[in-house]
Figure 1 (cartoon, rainbow, N blue to C red):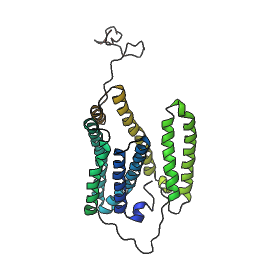
Figure 2 (tube, helix red, strand yellow):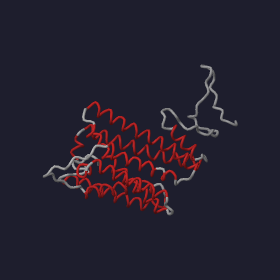
Figure 3 (spheres, rainbow, N blue to C red):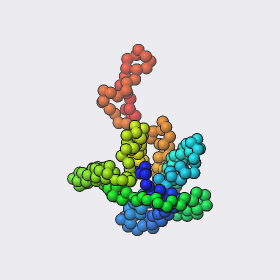
Figure 4 (cartoon, helix red, strand yellow):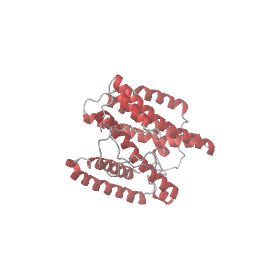
Length: 289
């Protein structure tokens, strides 16, 4: 939903929007670090998500405005993408160490000094927002933003609720509601004069293909690491630090977590030992047999 003709950055200024999102993320991180109830922690995490979502399109707008030459712009976006991947890895590793050395609150409170430094550097290094030209008009697509945001939130919650037998009925209702809201979002965007997400963009094959691939990667990537952390700590009894480093190693191509020894199997598909070639094949020998 970052491709609308009139985004927040277009109307309010990219640097101003970026600073607001960064400040919101920093404040929400501080609130999460001091949260003493589950609802307050969840609310703070939701505010963190809003702050991060606000900064991303502003970042892209700032990069586009700062780097005008095609080659320089490509390099800038490459570095921007690489920093996102590096940040995820560094954050995972650092979070485990902080949790072991201090407590879980430290993974949120560390964002306070980092955010304050980033905010101070924003005013110094980021280009100022150009003044709005007289006669320019524009407004935010609030109906589309509300329908799209709530629809996606309900969709994610419904998918998670299907995992529990006790909540599957409510999950079905939530899923139907999410699909209805997303259908309403598409209808609003089709009629809006200045849509948040112009549907005509999906006539471009490259845009449609990359959007589908990106959605599938995100749907597989993010839950995988959340489930991996739960598995390593709750099932394998790893410490937060060891779990974090294992998760970081799993980001490397070709790495896989070593599986425990398998029990004896009578599956006919189990591998047979046929060495040397031409000799009689023998059933596999399992540990302890």
